[in-house]
Length: 407
Image (cartoon, rainbow, N blue to C red; front, side, top):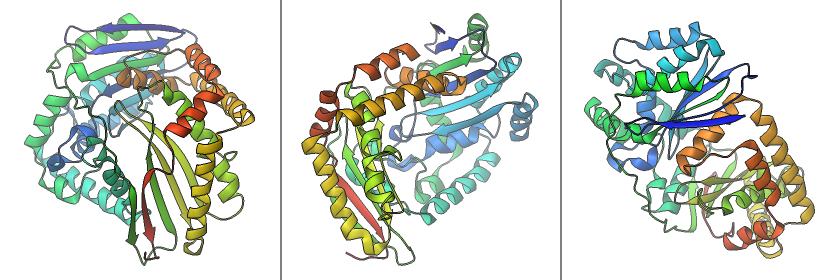
């Protein structure tokens, strides 16, 4: 694999990891904007803007966008998170230029008033559907409580109130501020002609404004404690726990990922054997999320209401044991082998590598090859993992519980 990078005069970055033997090309526009960059009055605007991107640009309708992607056989989509928005496509190499043109058009939408009002109703319905499904929005309530006033406590979808009050002018202003060239990284993987990629970026993105708009970064001051929510119509009891974890820019993040895999990410984890294999819970997981200035461990549990008290006690004891005794060498070796296999297998798919290199560049500003990743996994020691377990205890958390039980 070869890696190349280039920065346009307006500050837009272009990166590529490529091999002439690849059979496909993946392209992505990584935009450093998400829910954390919104005020409460415009909460959800980043996700709404992602939807509006597919409604067309100047000279293109929504039908044109979808038809032109389909004509080149592209697999394409977009996603918005707390700290980024990504537009991406996978195509055969001969259609890479057309795919690039279409993706460049997506990040420069027309935001037509008629399309805006139609899509607003789609977003409002999406929020209502989300609130109707378990855990009924309590995961966002827990997140908001944990992060307190930190911007990472914002909702990606927004609220009925914030979306209802948005106007096309709000969105145009937000787009101008946040979709500046300095906030965009164009990535490509697979079969890539890098010189041509740079030429395409100059042609379709060279006129994007280079307006400066720094992201607010502050250390979170997390809030803990337990909150109950009564949902008589629910048949299961749902538990969300959020605990502090290493930031996504800290070297500890690698050990944190291995720790969550050992404790709760797979069918070989401690949580699986304690709760799922035994039939005590319907679902349980532990995940790590890393951001520029913060990180969280998120636990999700669903079970029969009659099992809730016992399960919460078992979960607390299991987490206490991890903090006190750490993990074993056998667990660490097993998970390291699993991670190494996953890294190599993902490297064979251009789209997987696209997200790996694009997300890393957006968050850290660096590039890591597959070999670099394998070396990092191999270098993590038992002490590294157990130190994270002690420094960031899972039981020191915000907990929200919803279901038919009342406190």
